[in-house]
Image 1 (tube, rainbow, N blue to C red):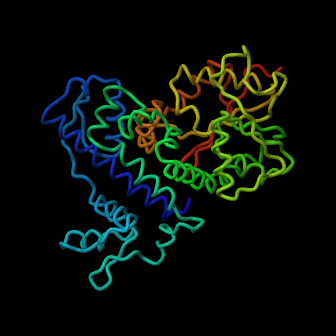
Image 2 (tube, rainbow, N blue to C red):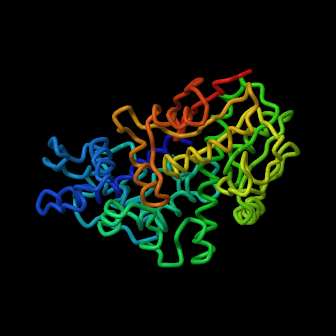
Image 3 (cartoon, helix red, strand yellow):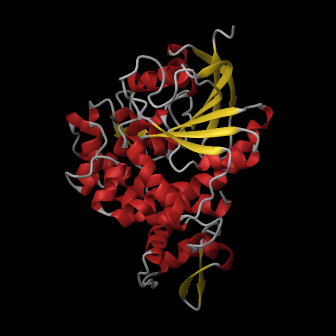
Length: 391
């Protein structure tokens, strides 16, 4: 992803920083025992520490709340421009923020706020490096989770909280199609667009692995698998997805005019289907793969569910094969940029981000050991696991 696009995402994340800061102030002035005693409170604490929102005492009670970064003004301007609102300078504060922060999209021309020429592609719907779909998704979906009411509900009751945000009939992402099909397609397009360019970079790291048969578990539109197929035309790549999901992702692929590589195919199944004792439902029991990919899959689920998923996956791994987890681990202390995604998982899936050692523990429970770890500048790192017993 382009550096300027990444910067816009970082600036927009200040909406969540602002809401967590407000919550911390509330907990200082009027502590809520239900919130402060919840297991999810520590996740909010880790996010607050990672974003320098405040300090905490030994009991994780907040103190010394710091002002929300002034760039929140830029975040609000991004929203105004994106939603075609009339933007005017009604005080010197906005002008000062724009003038003193060069690494942001706006400039002042004749006392009017304009988008800098070298940032305009970020807001261009058709730009290869822009994040138009991501912004559309963020302002129409993600930001709705970031309210004090929803934040408190998620901390006390856990997630996901889709029905609190969109109503009783929406309990997960794919239910959005019933609620608003255009909105759902927009979300899926945003996910594919943001993952596609990143996947091309990640695939480069896999050049050292000679993989003939690849299985991408829960690969959705196949952004990573399509990039892998293109870079490795002699490999056979399969995306494993639920049948009802496949119907949706295939329609999205048609909308995006995605070409199906000759070495690329979909397999219908469900990794929670227990009708067979071993392996993944929908895949022949004799099928074995050199490389099995789980990209942003385990962070959707609890530890217990992750062990179930990975246990079924390992059944189809060749003895010399490798499992690749595409995730962004937290630091050993549970801190870092991934705390933002950790709260997103709390809101949207009920899952969580983990440290590297926590991912390895899940792998160990399924007969896998650590092979290697590649840290990247993208939103995901590469965690390689292999069989304990290779012979």
